Image 1 (tube, one colour):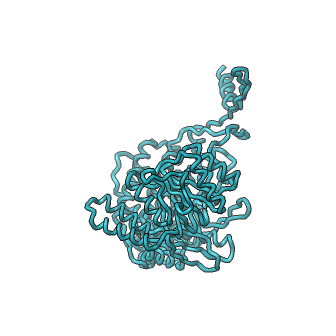
Image 2: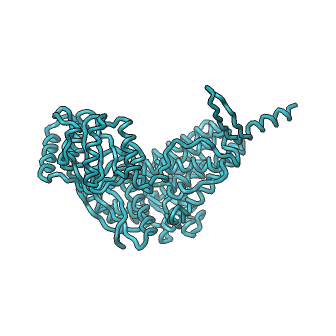
Image 3: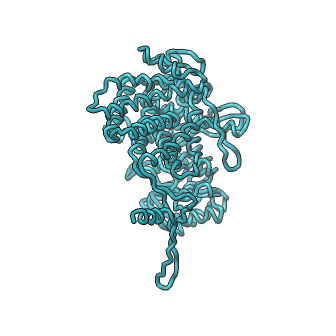
Length: 573
């Protein structure tokens, strides 16, 4: 009887069902997808297999002598050394392996989003922590105590990293950080240092494809708004997930737009002149938003809508700044203006606007330089006279947007593949440099994490299972240095052992030259924010995987009949 019942339950779980329902005389069917459920060691082993395969592919890019990875994509292969790009491209046919791989992708993406670099390090740490965690749980360690030990160790390491951080400010220090993140290409580091010098450490620096063999730096007048497109259907470049508008007209509206006739009038003005349109307003009615999307895809109208940045008086001030920069006017009911009376001279202009999901970059605004300078002078006066810190900060932010400009790093190369690969490294270098300026630097090459293992030996725990959690982090922190040395064809175990035997916290292994050096003096440094974020994200996801006791995935051979409601960006024209 027991066997019969078990077989019946298993069959119901593994089989796909389709029910036909009748409602008000209308017949329709609902489809269900069969699921596979794995428990305990089997569930963790399947996920670990996916984590291992993804991590092995990402590992090869680590360090100055890391190798390239070729990714087969639609149109042409992509060559890269960027860890997060490699991770995103991996998809397994086995659903259980895919669960583990997707969680590691989340680690890489989270680290990339917060720190902009360190994705390979985060992936390596995740694999090391999860692998040791699986072994410990299988050996009977109490997983909750082990989890507490891991969290204690991570907190202790982060405190140690922050205490050793050295803040940077000089162009040479910025060059060193950028050079290391660009895999040792000093030219990239020097150009990024020049860019920061020209627009300031908080200034806007963008990376774009160049038209020559050499890398170039161009500083242009521009403004960056901290708001992106309202709908992903406005995207024009599916590769970068951005909407790019050349020589557009800019409608600046103070309130929520609900007048369809007035908006149509603005669109007609743009169509007559064959120019794109950017709409900046508090919000748009859903019907108007749908109308814009339909016109973009069916009528070929280049249009994008962005919510106005800020709130209350600050929003109004930001819109007025934008109007002065672009040579337009803020359409406001308080001034007796309405959409149905808009003329061409009320719309702002710019040479190029790039809108992403998070922000809008306006280059070469068409405003009067004299009016812009007068506005800047007003803001400087307001900063001097204001006693409220909040008002000062907002005025300073607006002043930097109006006067700072935008630095454009144009990446050169002999082929499209070379430019794309170098562009990934430039982006990593830029993000790492910003992180270093923000939280400081520590010796690079993985040695900051390696030497942090020494403080874990004295960390107090209440039982052996917590101590095992501390030991897992202790072993995982050796992985980055080990892999960098391995990719340089050196004896990694010997190098790690030799470094741990001595007491100089700055001594490390220069994999590029194959010798032991003072990492700080040699310019081999890592931003604290990058490795801190990598460790936090890796430990967080590894613990979730280690404490997993059941994994539910679609049964093999089953396709989910439910359509994905998230827009497919790759399918957009």
